Amino acid sequence: MIEINTKAQDKVLVDERQLLNFPRGILGFENFHSFALLDSSQAPFYWLQSLDVKEIAFVLIDPTIFRPDYRLHLEEEEAKEVGLPAYPHENGLLFAIVTIPENQARMTANLLGPLVINRQTKTGGQFINNDSQYKTRHFILEELENFRTKTC
Image (tube, rainbow, N blue to C red; front, side, top):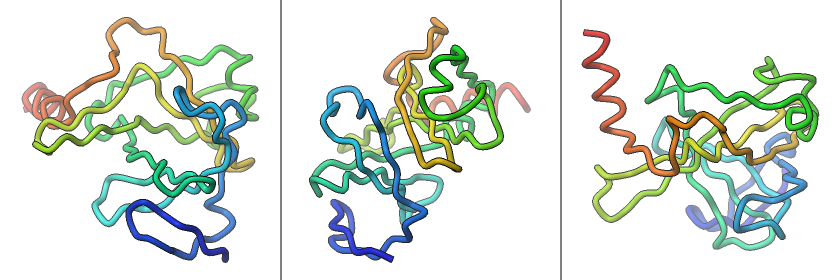
């Protein structure tokens, strides 16, 4: 276990299995490569916390929770960047970065630039989804409601 400084909880102990490497960083934060994936106190969210700068942390969600039809198609070369032979793959985790404004009912998720993490090698990357139906701001609660309406 190691102690890290976090934006949400000050200092926390994390298991080394929670430590991740993003070789290319994250868009806009390309110089930051070391992160920890932390559970949030509010499911189904997670924190992606920079190990270098405590103030750099991202709220994440699995996009299939509010958009079950969401698909990311990675080229073979992109999948190899995170050490996967192909994507989707059983060792791949998929997350969208969440933006939470003051009015939390208007929180959005970036489905255009999802994160893929290889749970075995602990390597992650952000990729652009070339499917034109996805954007950088999908309203999570609206998408959930739309899905419920379609299935009822």
